[in-house]
Picture 1 (cartoon, rainbow, N blue to C red):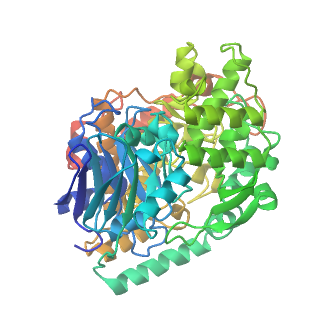
Picture 2 (cartoon, rainbow, N blue to C red; picture 1 turned 45 degrees about the horizontal axis):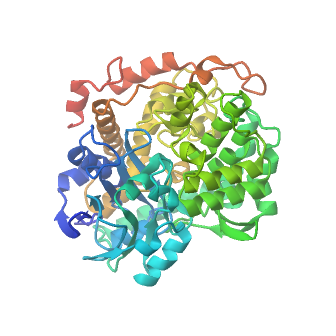
Length: 588
């Protein structure tokens, strides 16, 4: 095959077997790779009622037809499973270089099933699979684990692993690859821990075949030129990283502060991308095949590491009322070592802070206390004391005290750094996200705040349903290629379709690509319906409590009107269930 490898590696931890299988070409055509392929495999192989931390759940690593081809930002990979945090079908993707090795090893997917008898790590070297005793790695952080796995395999390999949080089945535990990159959301680190899988190292020696090399090089060049011309990918992200958004979102009054009680953080500039560059910046970093290089290598507390990214800066900064960028960076480093999702960790701590200030819990935890944040991260990572409860995420934590309304989450997944009272379409995107509270399923901040591909009124609801559907479909396709979300600032569906067509030799139009995205979104929705995932709504605060100051003052999210229109455009019934004719049209 061209573009794709056409192969799946199935690893059974219970039986200690690795078997190569052929992938159906029609599945690859219709679901592309990455998120789409992962969704299709999970849908076919894991029943919706499956307990996420049971041996019956699976962990599916996938790459796309453009991975390792040199296409801009094509160094990422995706992991799909049933989330223990949300109960939804879930994929989390990550950058770095790990995904490149999966593709070079000759696979479009690696399916991990069963449960190892004791703590284990894997070494995949092309067609060879080794099962290694990881008992000596128990309890080690992700950095040390990576070093020891490389010493026991091959220094050229790339490693994805879990830290203590995943081992101890903390539901906000994540998977870390290349030491600093996280497949962060949804608690997939706990799924890996439940399988007694500490790490997987991959080393490949092959390269994907390109159907039409000259056409592909031309398409790749056009894409690179478009990324180089866009002001976001040309200047803002390379110069200031993702945290360039801190002042931008704060200025419009939509930077969630103190557990979404406010939309303005008065000390925003102290934690901005500009301040990061001035005070703790060491150098830029980039994922494999990425011309943007938005990553920041920083130094704080005597340690050097990557990050913090915008969401992390917000989660441990504005959301917790903290204005110390050095301690926010240290919080980020800690989470990477423990293997913790920074968004859920920071948001859960912020929830605890509000419950403490309201007298709901007896622990004295106050907004603005950076040292308390660092101490709580240690407790969450090791699941000690109150950390054991916090490691289950904000919804379960708050529910234990009868105060779940103070969990700023959707379907159990903590919301990120955009208050939808100031960006109405973002509220609709949060509510209808198939994986729960996520900004990346349909990044409505792009048109509502950044004017990409064009500017719309962020405080109005008209037209938001159709635009949200469009961005969700495009994003599902891009996640399946598997390319970086930031590439969407410079590229349009025609760019993606042309690269895909040239790589695979199968002609895809931009319409074909959008249809694939729509198919993937609907498949995910059907899985969630069958898994009895709660409906599409937002925390009560965002629907009823108006922002009290700033440029979004007086607004709540007008969800109901947008949601009705959204369901109609999607071809779903009034409960958000896809209609039979919709599924038939999509070949589902």
